[in-house]
Length: 342
Image (cartoon, rainbow, N blue to C red):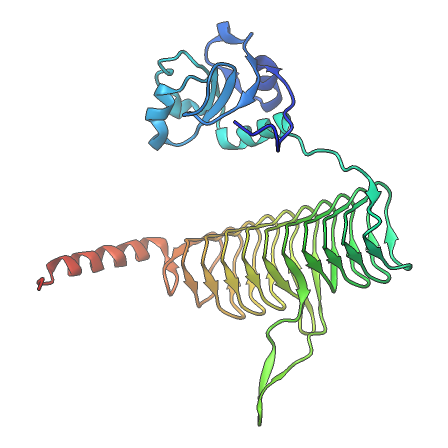
């Protein structure tokens, strides 16, 4: 259950209305009059709460929950919980739960206004309905779209363009970038810094000027303390609808497709190409100039050193087809089990 000091809850909502919104069905029609006041985990839920059961490993918690309603799939439903919770059945319970969460906890509206402690260049353009917090800096010729929120001490560099309904978190920095609509950049992220471009010189590495930009399309989310370097001569690109976790490093001239999901602590080296709908597990490293096809899934802690064909699932270091990786690990375990101890 969310702490009401930090999150403003809407509702309550009739279960029947919720079911119609998400296109689900109720296992027992006699329970349609239930009022749902909040969302909670299976373990913490009580009367009036709705929870979700989406993984078999949580079946014991499902059987013991005191929730009034549980969102689950027909395959997982089985016997209802001992507490008599109403089962709401849908093919994708996690997706439905995300939709319901937005119903109960919608994003609060932007309270427009410019804090007098913000520093805004005279040639910057600020759209209608924006909120600019204390300490924010907006550079010359920057253009901020409508209904944007620029957090405390965030820096929007000269000539940067932000689309409508963007959020830039506290202490984030955006430079050399063109950003689409409805993009959220979390606290501490750095967008548009110089990439790691050097050539050997007689007295050590010599920096190559980084003359490109960062292009971020619509509906992108970039996590806290993530860095996206600008291109060296071309652009670094983040495709529409892509979500990037915290502490991710994206080097110069990387191009990431649409609808990708990148978990924390990934490092992507320069000029790598990542297709649409790619999912990458945490702590994965991707070598420079690698091409990853559409729909690829990469297991956590992998090392990608070769191109990957579309729709493959890979893992390991060096990354290989997931079945081969599992076979390799099983073979190593058998060998290790036969080694004498002592």
